[in-house]
Length: 130
Image (cartoon, rainbow, N blue to C red; front, side):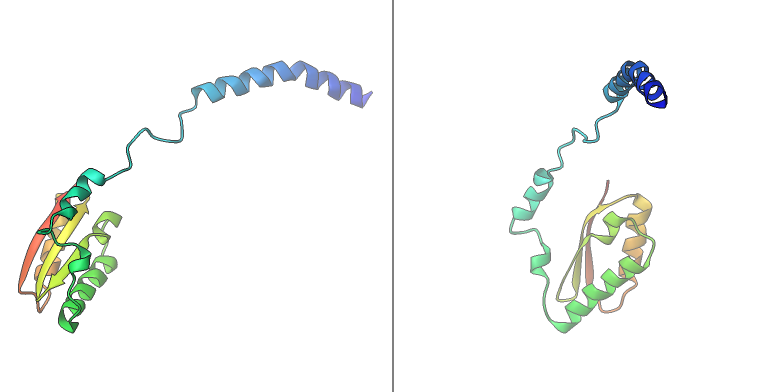
């Protein structure tokens, strides 16, 4: 008797459950966004020989120390993930900062942080607010 009741309930509910599943699948938003994830256009500027990239970082102890101290300061402070991933290139005491940051306030905070560090001769700030 119990088996028959369960079977009958299943037969009665099957069309209803199928229609609910079809409706919710049709109204759900797709998980994948239709946004081009490629940043090739932005990276074209890196192909220019005049633009510094991390490969241009000098390997002398003083330049390595400056870059390391900037990196550590970025990681230690409450910056966005974008700001923590900016390019820091030091050549003969001259620091180049490149990459996106979230806000103008974040850009200013990074600039002030780097200016306050010892051993830096000049700063080329190429940071961009998203």
